[in-house]
Length: 77
Image (tube, rainbow, N blue to C red; front, top):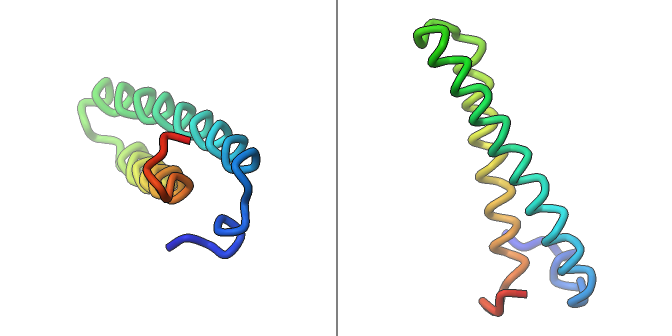
């Protein structure tokens, strides 16, 4: 759902937020790779790493949804 704040954002604010979200998404993706590599090295036995992966996937999904909501006109910002 698009927040009221996002509806009121001008293009400059949307652009800045877009770049922040891309950076956040990139960091989450690297964390996912790190955790997944660690889990593979543990031969898939670490429950803690599995839980961390679930959390990171959820965060990545939230960031992606917000990114998509910023581009309400499919305009590629």
